[in-house]
Length: 137
Image: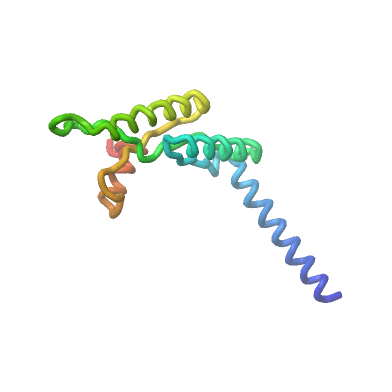
């Protein structure tokens, strides 16, 4: 009996904690879920499933980040871009258009593909500028 009572107490305490977490997730003043995807077929399908699940759970998701977008270089290389980069850019543009169409009520931010692995504080500052812009007045 003693073990059963302690197990019931633990289950009740855990249930209360889960409820508090659920309430925090559902409170738009405290929580905003940001979905991150890539501009590919599988990324779009997973994004649709994720946002649908969040909506069903009443968890606010007002922002979507499309990561690793192949953007044209500021200064094109001599001879132009390669066929792979050009075709990938066109393909991604189609998925980005679909994302904007399906999720038109949400803020969508594109983060470009970097020519190197994103590492260190300087790269994080670059991404922060893309996501949040300048915070200086």
